[in-house]
Image (tube, rainbow, N blue to C red; front, top):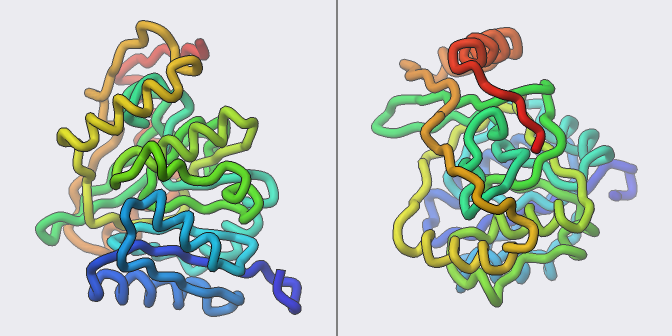
Length: 272
């Protein structure tokens, strides 16, 4: 805590792109303007796990945000929401799942996948929403997408990022969040904070390589013979511009759309 009693935020960004780093930093400077904060840039990370661990040793904040350099958060109430919610949760993200069955958080499909994330590609906005119940923070999450991971300092110091195993740029996030869940930590996904991600992920051979390492590490905690779904994408909408995105990012619109999809797909809400 700062001398004024406000939480101190440390934002960690690993980036080799000076322009992306500047844009991301400017976003967080605005979001955290009324809170004590610092932004730590790692320009030469050997892996994201290594870069995050190195930055953590420098960080002074009691709330640590591990962020990609290509996201834009557009909620002016972001800092207050996160600081308040991290009193009840140990780790927060913007997308994830209540059921890890393999090497990708979306493998179990719906209704387990949760979150709301916008993507921008070729100047077109796409809003993707998975199960947003309960709104605004989905609880009982087992794995979180690494576009942005928000946590209390003591949690990440306890769990750490496994830089020995995940010595590249894939699966560090799922390993960290699933390891935290296995250690009894409480994870949540925020659905009410608009976030734009200028990437849809890279799932090539390198991801597959680290996926095999993830499964080997956590095989005793993964369900046997679980079927990968991954075909259900949730609600996906093409939007013309930024203003439209903000208008549709509303609880009643997203929840009504989700309920309509749920009726259409006839999901079986199995807890096993």
